[in-house]
Image (cartoon, rainbow, N blue to C red; front, side, top):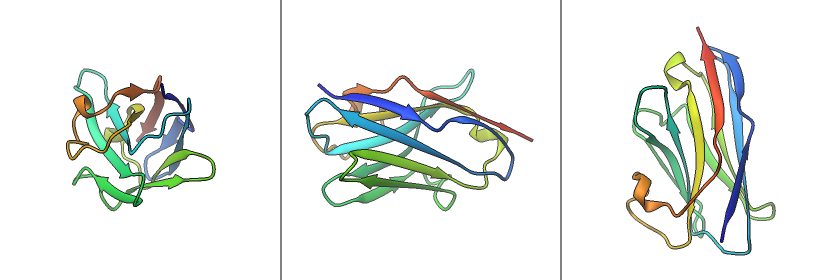
Length: 124
């Protein structure tokens, strides 16, 4: 089992930055960790993912350049640095994990474990 706890959400004005963190615990190694988000009235969408073994990041094309995903091996955390935030970034952000690597990291079904979500609100 993997437990995921997100932190760092909040409210920010457009153009500002936030850093989300996801702490993983439970003793099971996760090869894939990702961030996905769900805006009101919309389906959940992929934001970014990271392959734990190599640190290779993957991004939704529309977010690349503004968002950066990183991992900390010692702390067993995955962070999402979000810069130049826009009102369209308002959503609940979820951390997700999978024990085995999956090339379908951009889909909900690729993940076995989910955090409770953290709200990000960007005001214009």
